[in-house]
Length: 273
Image (cartoon, rainbow, N blue to C red):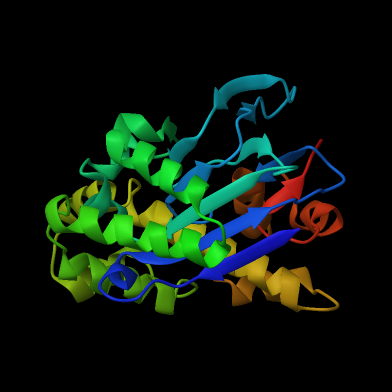
């Protein structure tokens, strides 16, 4: 497998976390369960064969995508191709920044995977073609950054400093922060806060906090040796172990112990088929 990650320079760094390229990945399994991670991504597939979303229960093909697509913030897990024999460029947006780039309310992207040309038109077509002609990974990254910077000049919504502040509050302390305490700190009503989150992120602030706590639990599972589940649940902001298990199953389809047995190299991807 060949892979590399690139962190763009300002001003693009204000909107994108990273670009990730890989080719030649050959896992033992064919299908992954992808769990909610709070991110929005643009995926550019440099191969010519389709990638699929599968029924979570039967693992039968449900929906196919070619060349480019975008994935919004998820509240539910999804079953996807494992990446076998793919060549991908994955553009990972910073949390809360997708609205600035997508030119649409992000609630329309929540739990959705959408063909890239339906959102970005000819831009994504030209970007994929340019990446495909590049001879090195570095050149692919340079082309991607140049294209995105050019698009920013004419197709970028005004940034919202309030959302930056609020999301950072959540990221800094997802295990202790509550919606009520957040409302008291930011000075907006709960109704207006929910409206802004759905517009900029696609989900409510309460749901987003749940996703961040779930991600904190996944990180802790990966880092701890002998796991005492009650202690882990409390450390990750859950009232008790029962609440923790219920939330974990809602987001992953598995109990924490089942996840630990199944999970391999990538925390947010669980082999299922």
